[in-house]
Each structure stands twice: as C-alpha cells, then as structure tokens.
Length: 227
Image 1: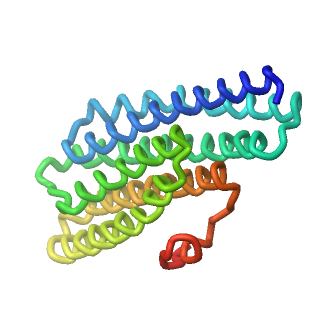
Image 2 (image 1 turned 135 degrees about the vertical axis):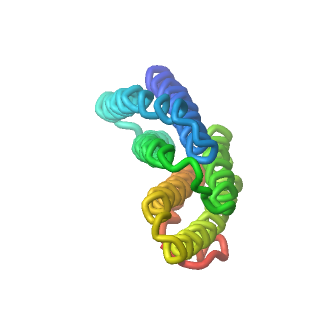
C-alpha cells in the first residue's frame, strides 16, 4: 500500500468517526426531546442536519477520489466500501433523529399525554446499539458488532409492545388519537435507527472478516431469519 493511500484511508476513518459522534449526539438530543418534552433540544437537532448532510457528501467524494487515484484491492477496497455504506447509514440516522425531533415538537402541544413507559426502554436500547456499533467500527471488533445485531430483536419487540399500548390508548379515549399517532411515528423511527445500527454492524463484520452476512444471521449467529 502506498503512503498516500494509507493517509487517505486514515483520514477517511477519522472523518467517519467524527460523523458518528455528530449523529449519535443528534439521536441523544432527539430522544431526550421526545421523552422529556424538550422543544429546545428538538430545535437543536433539526438545525444540525445540514452539517451532517455536508459531511456525508464530503466523505463520499473522498472515497470516490481514493478509488479513482489508487484503485485499492483486498482489505483496502473493503475499507473504502465499508466507509461508503456506513456513511450513508449515518446520514439516514440523522434524518430519523430529525423526524423524532419533529414528533417531539408535535407532542409538545399535548403536555398531559404520557407515552408508554416501554418507549424509554426502547430508546435506551437503540441508542446503546448505535454506541456499540461505533465502538465495533473503531475497534474493528466483529464480536461486538455481532452483539449489536443480536440486540436488534429486543428493539423490535419493544416497538411492537409500544404500538399495541398506543392502540389501546386510542381505542379507550378518542382524544388521545392525535398524540398517540405522533408517538407511534416516533417509536417507528427509533426502531429504524436500531435497524441502521444493525446494518452498520453487518458492514463492520464485512470489513473485519470479509464475509457478507446480510440475510444470513441464522447461519452465522444462531439468530432467527427475520430480514
């Protein structure tokens, strides 16, 4: 590997870690705005989105430049491909954080509405998935990435519980329909963030092991084939 390619790969890695940190902060602020009813935090999340979008474009352009200039192969090529895929997933996470913030602002008009307690547990689990996905990437730890993939089923289960409880609320009191629908959307966005953390972890395993495990969880981790 040339020194120029190595420097380019190192710079890509650092840019992606920085992007990870920005997106993780957006998610944390978004879920706090939702759970705590903090409209000010929701506004901060939405204002941060353009910075993440700009960084996503810059990282992608740098990846394409490395591919064109140095034509990396083997593990170096896997690294560039992984950065491209993870970069895209992070931008989508940031969009979901904005969507959660928007639902939090909508719920601010219903101060007496109480989201199901299970939503807080779901939020905590999903944010831990994001943090552990970052750690698995930084440490190139495929075992930690596999743990993130296993955790996704917990978030999926909690999402179903939250949705069922919201349906019960709406059936019991028609006045709760509008805030419950906003909460329903927020729960779905949190669940989708968990899915993207899972996707990033799949990419980490590809980076480290050279194995594409998408759609093969049952084979590699004794997990149900739910994708």
